[in-house]
Amino acid sequence: MPNNFTGKAGIQLPNEDKEDEDEEEGMNDPVDANETTTYALNNTFVHPEMFYISGFQDMPFANYFYIFLFLVYILTVFCNAFLIVLIYLEQSFHSPKYIAVSNLALADLCTTTAVIPKAIDTFLFNSNFIRYDACLANMFFVPYFSAVQSLSLVILAYDRFLAICFPLQYHSINTNSRMIIIISSTWMFSAVTLSIMVLLITRLNFCGSTVINSYFCDHGPVYRLACNDFYINIIMAFTNIALFLFVPLTFILFTYLAIGVTLLKITTSEGRQKALKTCTSHIILVAMFYIPIAVTYLSATFVNFHPNARILNNLLSSTIPPMLNPIIYTLKTDEMMNSVKKLLKSKQGKNGKVRNFKVLSQ
Image (cartoon, rainbow, N blue to C red; front, side):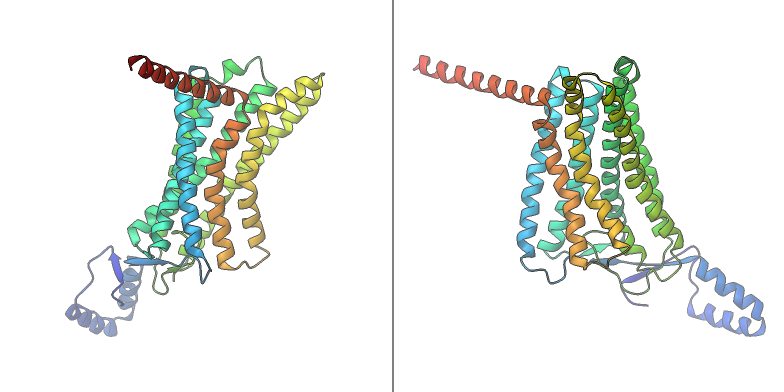
């Protein structure tokens, strides 16, 4: 067995003398030998000490792309942190809608932090090797925060559905405490589901290649490296795609179908435009998040993408929307823009007072 593999057995592996005795007993008793062999196979898992994350293959100017990702990360952290602080400081934003918005900003912040720093460390500084346990952690956190992102967009769709379709009952149905419970439930549900996905990886044997053709310890490329049956891992992969991609997208489409029916019942065009304006920012966020991912998964079944194209699309899909979400939500929401303007004016006023005080003191 190669040095970079370790066996994790449920029983202590026998020494050579014991193996010789077992072989002699097995020759005399074929049934016992068969049972012993089956028992050892079922209770031993071969796990590599290291995986190798391949990333881009001979992609020109790849280092410049990683520098671009670093700039994206800085901007993402600043914009989302600013949005969270703004919602926290502005008393009028302490409502179910903006609790959901701050939850999306937190999910965006976590997703980018899980992806970009590790990708830069791996490829820009040639740290392609990753320990088995660290790989499992990476396999959990990247899809975990992406799943929370997806469910956060569902929560925002639910909020808009109640606000437009049930405006009179909105404040009694959608309270701050209920919104917090819903948000907490989505984080917990995602954690449990993806923990099961990662735990199922530990039952796989890796006795061949340990090269992962992705930009992180991606679930699909990892379980395909196994040399024993991974049918249950395939089922889990399709279950997660359904739970965190197609089911949320279907729910959002149905909510907007109901919203569209409600808007048609509004008699004045001004009322329809006012109601629709509250949804435009969310519609843009949904399109940016779901369309690239859905196109990737659907087209992969018909077209064999080059690994670089698949990795580039997945990497941009997981990093660009978190950067643009707070910008779009701020620019497309009147309340947010007014709050930002008020904050900037108050800051300018304070700076003016400080300058006047310095002049007078001189």
